[in-house]
Image (tube, rainbow, N blue to C red):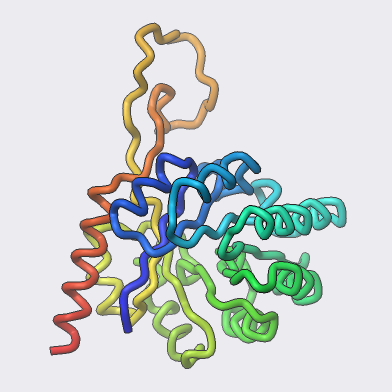
Length: 254
């Protein structure tokens, strides 16, 4: 099986860097610090104009949990319609019930609405009460892949479950590993889990060009996040991840 690399990009600039680095697909989003929310109409439109690889915007109206109101559901449906109009290749969804199960009824509506675009089920999967039951539900819904960290904070921590999910899926749906995936651990993940589809931001904070910087005000107020830093996907990191992954897969064949 060939290696597939998806970049979680939060800007058009990151989309361009992802494509130049050899990514196969982009999960386009906003607000990375909240786990990703739906990007603006203009961001999707310009990204579609600038890159040729597949674009899958995330359909998530807010941060927080994955239990959505009827009003939020209406917003999600409208966003999917807009993604289709803008020429996206797919969308990324995820809805849960209050008891940690996949909301099959409403997810089926979104998958049907998205057709003929593809659909990925995102890391709401990692918040379910039974990952193997959730796996079967998502297959039934009609999604083409699941993005998961193995129900842990990072894919490395969840590697054991990731392997079990691949075995249980038995090629009925793709399992894509994400969260904390970098060049320094991609080889280990491939060898441990057998997964060949990966998701990463491949990002770094680039320093702002602002000369004047007010030391008394912090807009974000989040520890560890540079006030005058811009989060951007790094072309070199994308290239390196792909290089290491393809080398590892080749070695595994020998």
